[in-house]
Length: 136
Figure 1 (tube, rainbow, N blue to C red):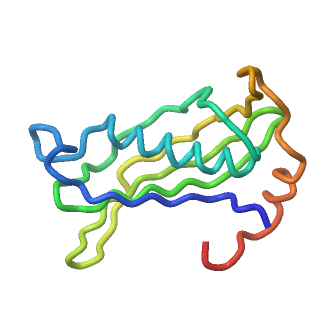
Figure 2: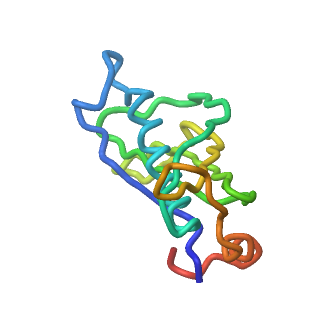
């Protein structure tokens, strides 16, 4: 069964924060792009590039000492592209509370060895219709 999700967690340490004590927006975007890249590479069975990021709104800060949890899920498949919904969550480790910080839709394009778009395997379309396997 093709896995269509990815999860990344990082502790927000001093080198990742701005002067206000919250995670740099660029760090959040980098982790979001990484998670979208993991999903798209799994789904396309090969290299992919970011073609578009739909508007990104930073809803809540993630503070130093918290965890940024990034969750990415395949939501659409075209001929050479995939749409991936990515959300970030801030988590307080002491009590487990979570709040959504950021969400965006990434469009990733499968590429060949020459960097040109290539078709996404048909298996990806079938994966959208099937439930995600337990424990993912």
